[in-house]
Length: 562
Image (cartoon, rainbow, N blue to C red; front, side, top):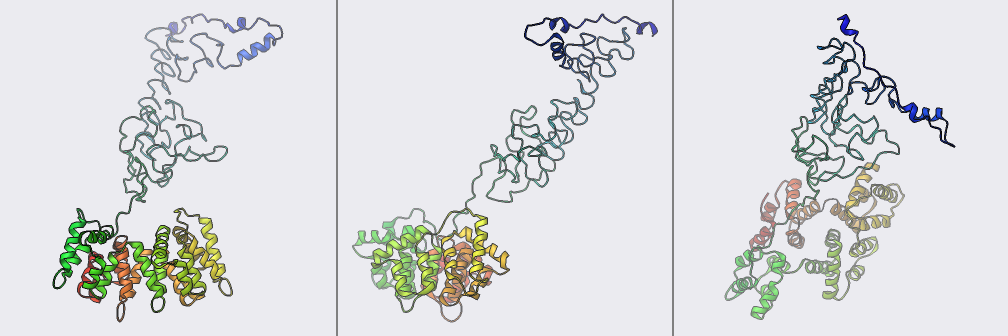
């Protein structure tokens, strides 16, 4: 053993940097300064031991290749088989023991933080993706080295956004970066940043170029597969498309309807002695409005007679009113209802508010056009001549059809409006009705719903109670109706139907108007609110409050019991 350890070392080559930098160039720094600059690069040129390089040389020494201490060729011992420090090397030799290849600690196969990673790696065990600690890139001795703390997490430029599930976030993202946080970016096939991403791992990889990240991802323990909390926000892996609510009416287009055959059925029902009301109910109760209205033209084309006049002469009572209503377009029917509400004995203020507060801007403009054509004056002129005061101003404002219909809500503006309403009513001696008018008639319905919530938070009382405390008469009932219709349109109509049938007698004009106008819009939702709020189905109450052919056709519009 003694003789083996005394074997001579290979001769060491002298550094060549001295000769390369000894030439003096006029006007250039002196030799010593040049040499200093040349020597400032650590490890180059090698200082001692030549090649393989010694401590401080290139490549680096800790576990590098070729090894420095006890490596190959062996530096001490010299013989074969090698003794301590010989081949195979014991400390830092080849194969390297710490961080080298094959690595023993953090190398391959990795023990802690290597690849594939064991803690937080891929597939991740705790914390999912992005990796939390010791993941990919590996942290200790692996490849490549982990980025320093405060960087973008070692991922693509901009880092990975938060995955948005409880506390599972990317610690390297937006952490400690100068200039504040980076804006989150929408990656391909991702849900909105910060939103839960159920459905992962079916999604495509966020970084398809990352080594070892190809193919179908492995199951992710701890990543719950739950439905999206917002059905309008599909999970990870697809484009975000609003989920359509779907058709909520009870009367749909009848497939294959032939208007020529339909008018023939109506003609036979009225021809001869007596009238076949059941045939009329079956036909009109199964056709949509756009299928019913053209029947007037086809009837006149086929028989040279006016369908409305023939039906008017054959039918009677509320059944006739209902049939006539069903043969008008929505705007024609609304215009006729407004005219009847104003020109009848007294003014049906509730009817005016109901129509003007629940229709869209386009519908109100069409009502105005038809009203001017049919009755030779504007809706505004008709309102002005039959109402007065702040109630008249409320109706005229609604009749403009100029409400903001943008879906977005500005929370700060909503809070300002809530404060303005409070200042105009509860927090004032007297009431500034014009402020209520301006906000309730001009703001979007989505915005006003937020305003009402902020108002409740501010003064501890909902807006309806404040209106009842501050106003009276037609203005009070009008403002309350506007607020109720904006808060929940279908619940408002359910209440209107309930009151139309409650007590002695039935307000058939209200019953007919709502059943006809909402049968192709939201009758299913109205039925749900009705049974929820009043304990009986709308179908049951109509059956108990009406009779005959009138009841049969109303129940067709109702569509069924709940």
